[in-house]
Length: 101
Image 1 (cartoon, rainbow, N blue to C red):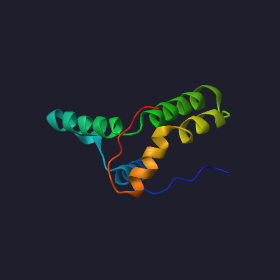
Image 2: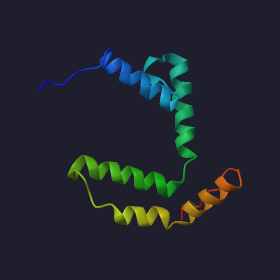
Image 3: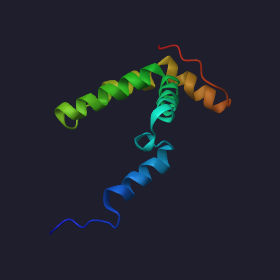
Image 4: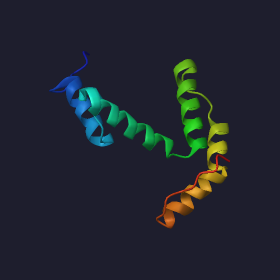
């Protein structure tokens, strides 16, 4: 059975992604592109370091080996001090202060 395409194809999917994540770097140019890249970098830099490291490692494993066993990554993330800091910060409606531990 041939694959059916939705009206709008890739552009519609791209618009959904942009709407969900709130950034559209591909249509920005010049200074606007630099500003948007800086905003995205600042947003990423504000995340918990261990969670970011584990996420990148998970993606690397997926690209190279298919569906990996990721229990060690889950333990590393959820067992970290930063995870507990993140939960507490969320509950107290304040910005987290990540430790990298």
